[in-house]
Structure formats: C-alpha cells, structure tokens
Image (cartoon, rainbow, N blue to C red; front, side):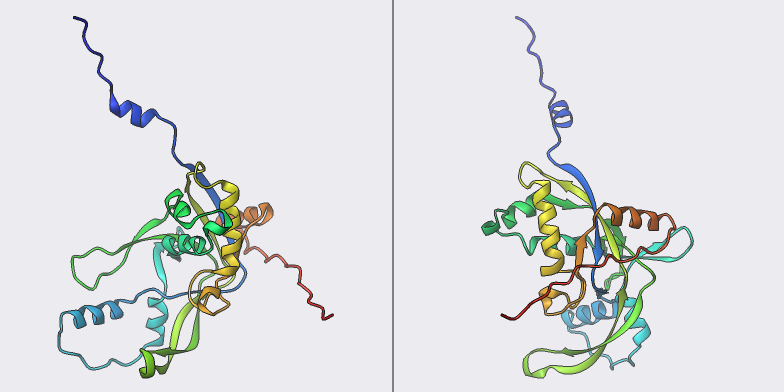
Length: 251
C-alpha cells in the first residue's frame, strides 16, 4: 500500500499570497496639533480612587509639568533631541470616523482591512510592575510649544473653569505606514477617507470632530512628501502649501 503524502500546513500558510498590501503616505497639518496624554498624576489619582484610599491634599499646580505630561514621548534621536509621537489608534479612528456604508465604504470593512504600524512606547504605570505600552507614530515637527487654554472640568452643573497647559506642534506632519487588505478596501478608497478625515475629524484636542479647529490635515502630494522626507534627513522645515480660497458670493 503506497504511503500517504502528508500535507505540510506550515508551508501552505507561509507561502500563500499576502492578504494585505503595505502602504505609506504623509499627512500634513493644516492647523496646529494639540496633544493631551494621560499624565502619571491622573493615573495615580484614578488608581487611588478605585482603591478607595484616603484622599491626599491637592498639590500646587505646575504648568510646566502639565505641559510635559501632555506629550507622548518616544525617546531621543541621534542628536539627543526628544522625539514625540501620537497614538496610532488615534490616526486610525480619525479615518474610521468618516467611513460609512452610505458612501460605499463601510466602517466595519475599514476596521478589519486597515492596520497602521506604530512604535511601541512604554509609559510609566500607576501600578508598579504593570505595563502600559502604546503604539505611536512619530510627529515630524519643530519642538512643541506650551499653550494655555481656558477649559471647564467636572460633570454637569459641577463644571468649573480652569486652565489647561498642553503641547502644540506647528508645522507638523506624520508618515503613516501600515497594511491594507485591498480585496476589501481599495487604495483609492483609503486615500478618499484620509482626505475627508483631515477636515471632518482631525487629530488631537479641539479637533473639528470635537467642536474645535485644530489638528486638521491633508494627504500630502508628491512634492510635499519629498519635502518632508528631506526634513527627516536633516533638511529645512517644509513650507506650507497655499490653499485656494473658496469665495461665497451672495446672489
């Protein structure tokens, strides 16, 4: 009786056609980007409240520390300068916000077909020994400036006015890299979503989606992409492209 040939399943899995295609593009900011990471102080307060620990006295406000805590750190570059990032999940959520089946691009399809790469950055946890890694994409920009904003904190009628100190990047750009299942969502559809998301949603605090006008962006054209690539190699900060104004005339 002839021997039965065994199927090597690992060969079928590893040598089959790729499910998703790699892609890369630049998004360029049209308005300043405001970041607001969870600070260690806020984490500790939440953990203390959940443990029902005794409340400590309120510490004096340190605007400089608030500013530093609002940034997503990614270590230092070759020159020793700090490198800052933005959550990769935030970029994907911005794109998902404008996907809809009525546009012929269902949100669930984009959710499953799109994966954005991010570099894992390790934050400082409130609970010693825990891990709070976060995938970040690098923000290419000059070093951030501290901004001061009037905000309201609290819930309902208990909201009180306060000042928020956060980091602002301007000008800025992000190089998005990832994989896309083009059998589900085409590259053209992804480009359309990125263009629409840049205005309709945006990134960071006070973006258009959250009743603000910050964090707006657009999909870079070839010349802009080359200029930002040159910036990553030590070149000058790219000049922002002028946009044609829309004139609204009364009848």
